[in-house]
Length: 298
Image 1: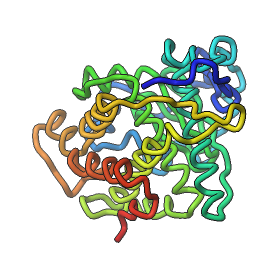
Image 2: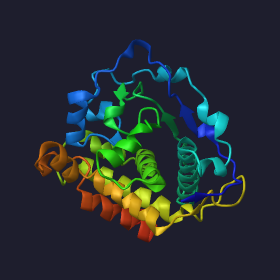
Image 3: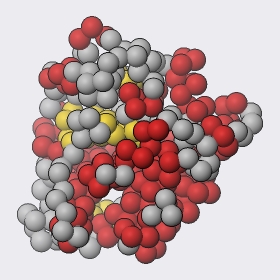
């Protein structure tokens, strides 16, 4: 996975709140047994905690906790060269690339793309979807159109869940969350709000579609020009990169997580889909590059 060394990064698309203190510490979920339950149920790597019933706060929890911003990425993430050597700068570059692609893709389809910020945080954060901790994993909050990410999740993806790791595994996670943003803009995300679970539930179909959208972005990322340079920001994806993405997709399949943490598979409680399904839908997006082929609801 390689970025254009000479391309400028747009750090305005990423809020760096790592190290910021959350006023009042009003977080009702956390690590330990609560975090483990969240992992067993597969209620992470998806939509905001309020929508998943993981937060005891009222909807619209103040995002003002992000006001104390460390501004780290804006200081040292300047170019694609930085993205090729630093993890947080790589996230900035993936966010830039994803938003460039979706902006152009939706415009081609006669739709308007509204940008979504990514918030980097440590341990806990407040969002318009309620307070959350790192235990819920990366998620998208439709209430404020933001993706929330603790970079520590990438280590856990490899050490706890058995993914092969690698830069593109991280890119897949980010691209999946931006898939949720596209669903929100297109009006399909609310189908998951019925809170039903199971292998045929809308929740699973929404998550699999986000996987497919991640694959569509990956297909076009190396040919999507940036406005500032007229060149793609992402210049190279190898088969090893794609394999790492598929490994990450499988690692967070509901069946894999349930088998690992509760010793049995219970499809009636699935919220994200099996390992095989997640790989299949990412592959569908990547091999076709066609948003229309990502209709998991048919």
